[in-house]
Length: 133
Image (cartoon, rainbow, N blue to C red; front, side):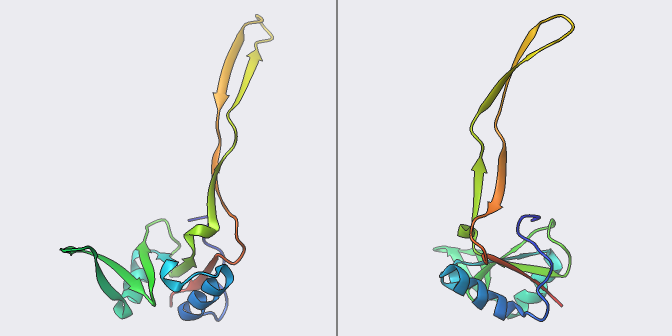
């Protein structure tokens, strides 16, 4: 969530955020996600539409607002909603790196390898955070 959220855009409604992100990334609103804490999503879900997600499995529902999918997460900041296009973010990994470390006390050598992972925004405008109240 720390890579997605930013300071809430002043005076921007959730509807404006949806239209703005869709325009910035040239994607249909149905491709966008709205994430927030459970209380913020529940408040927004009062105006949501519900559709079955698994064909005949009517017990399984996805929730949407304005066509965008809603995802509650406990890691989101309270009273904030973030509209984003998942395709605007990339997971990246550095190449596998290795090193030999020589202990200066006894000259012994140790070998190690590591790979670093991260998430970064690769398309500016792919996310907007708004206040949910």
